[in-house]
Length: 258
Length: 276
Ligand SMILES: Nc1ncnc2c1ncn2[C@@H]1O[C@H](COP(=O)(O)OP(=O)(O)OP(=O)(O)O)[C@@H](O)[C@H]1O
Ligand SMILES: [Mg+2]
Image 1: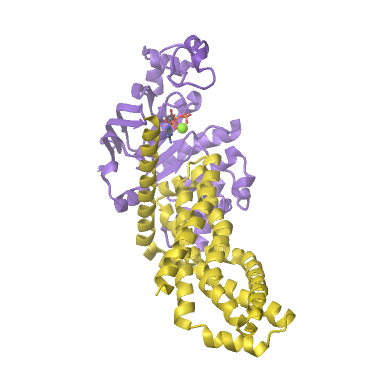
Image 2 (image 1 turned 180 degrees about the horizontal axis):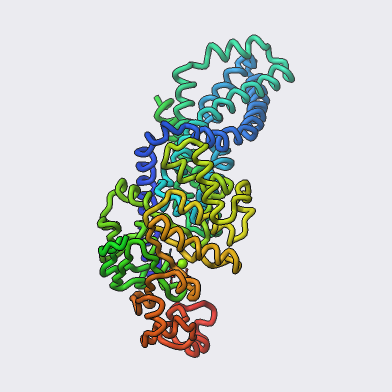
């Protein structure tokens, strides 16, 4: 009986949080027009959310591309198809690994930082103080961070894929002796702008929205204590990673299913 | 200046946190141009009262009229317009930690006005000079002491020249000199700019020195009110206990709990802290 009660309570609070999350998203979107004359606020956040995530994206992209080059070569060479290495590397990156891995890294690097920052601002009453100064924290603090995340994510994913293709090139062409011309020309002729690249970009935009939304919401909804903030930060990473992987399946099924 | 109608008029205010009633039918009038003090033991809901006036919390019942508008009924737009005319000093300062002292004081001006940076600079320096921290303008909030943070927050709260100033514990953490400065500042601001001030405090001597009217809160009700002289001379036990700082009397020092001996010998629940 007690177990049922606690289950019901958990369920209810889950739906309450879901509701609050959507209300927050609606508030952010409705306040977006106030950001237009103040793009500087967004730019500052693009720097701290996006530019500061660059290193981890560059390094990871390079290594993932190199591993793809190695694994792809070993598989393809059995069929004498190592000329197609470029296609394999590029398609895996653009369709899947670019958007997904960079979203996971983004959640860990930028999402957690956003939640911790906003949660601490709440815990130290900075958000409250802003409200009393008639400055809406949703518009002044949350919205610029949200927009910056949504802008940065596709760019980071694109950079990840580009660096990955280079990594595959270093290993495949540089070390393993795949023909350079074949690597690039096969890639060029087989990667479709619409089917592959646009779909990859759409994925990364969706991931950007979801990860930043979760991060910003968890920060704003955190219990204003050090423990509350640390829990919220963990939740951001866990929930947004799960959301990215789950959504990736759904999006892939929708885009490439037929 | 002495307009008869109160600028803040609270009637039948009730508010609960969980099962605990913080306010139970409170009536308070705050008059234009006066310094009104809200006093009471720690945890009675003084900060909560300021948040209710500022529209950050919603009462369960009752009305809170600020300048003829009922705060709980206001729309988003009206509430934010009203808040532009209110200043609040938070108990811990609540400075924005990602900007230095100067930018903190300039923050409301930059958000709400289109003044150019030269004008903002003069205004900010004026306010910082008034709290004695003009020299600290380049420090970050993490480099300030508690008392300094609160004085910066004070400069920020008055930057927009509000109509009502609410001070939450303005005196805590001040040394005797800065205490004197803050006390005089509150009074001077009030009289020179024609503000209305609400002070929440435990510091009886300082508060009594500047308050025109004092409300004593306890157990969710107003237990005594009057000028400091009236309270001093009043025969209300509440007023006597509070003004003299006696531990025994009607004002409870403890958060509500059952008998101490009963709690001590409750060995069945020895492994956890138990609520009454
Ligand atoms: N977020 C909250 N959730 C639940 N209860 C709260 C919350 N904030 C405050 N309370 C309760 O409300 C009561 C009033 O709190 P408040 O901060 O208004 O007290 P106060 O009079 O300002 O005390 P102090 O003089 O110590 O600052 C306290 O007893 C506290 O337990
Ligand atoms: Mg308080």
